[in-house]
Image (cartoon, one colour):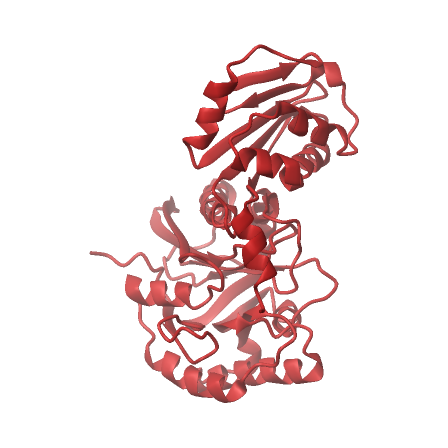
Length: 397
């Protein structure tokens, strides 16, 4: 069976002791066989972790050779020592791979404000380097190595034809809590064997992120470490990717990132529902996004979905206080295909049927239609449960 891993990459994962459970990997390493194109999109928080600063200065690039990630410790708000520790982590990997430290990208996730236990990481890096491989088990170990509170690994893969050649895309991400654009408490790496320039990789990643990872929320809390990387080895032999071929690759990349992005709120800490919010008929993307995010962040909307309560008033009022101007008489609300509200008043519907449709399905669809334009927008969120409150109140204690 052919490996789903794009050509030009070796991966691995290892437990070095950052996580308490010895059966859970906390180091993840990707090594590129040759100089590789890489681009990144990062958190918009003003407070950022040492690895974010490091990667921002080194992407986009056509000379990247490795990505090292640790979980269990965010290396954020750790001052000059955190900067030194991050540089040392990159330098160790670089020496093992026979490259420059500037060719190594870094990511960290976990508790904020704690220095990295470098003695554990030094020993662990030597081990994970020996465990690199190119099959699915190596990819899975690397995907587990970036997890923190995730229930399980989050992965996705796609294939498409570009210039007569089969191109592979495969991605991993992590994230469950402290999730809000732009982006979220998430780390993600997407690998492809398509041939891209650094500028193409950056443009593709930015446009795709705006429709996927920037359209999710769990709790409205923006992180210090968010990083999304795209690495393109060029090993598929596609030659230059332009025009329709580039559009085809963009479409597949968008679908892969959407698959990954939706897995984050679906795994929202304690969540029992993935909520998809569809906005139709707005005057602009900005208006649609603002309404969607307001509905998605409403604690009252979230708890209504948790309880299977088709409480249309909470959804309609959230749209109304979003700050977007629209004609209230032109608004429609549809939940799981059931029309609940239009022309300024609720319509007759069977509450028990709609309630059951929410309770019986993990996914809940909320559609709001307006008459201001033709813009459509999608956004994903999780519901809010007692388990979320319990988990986050006890996270450090």
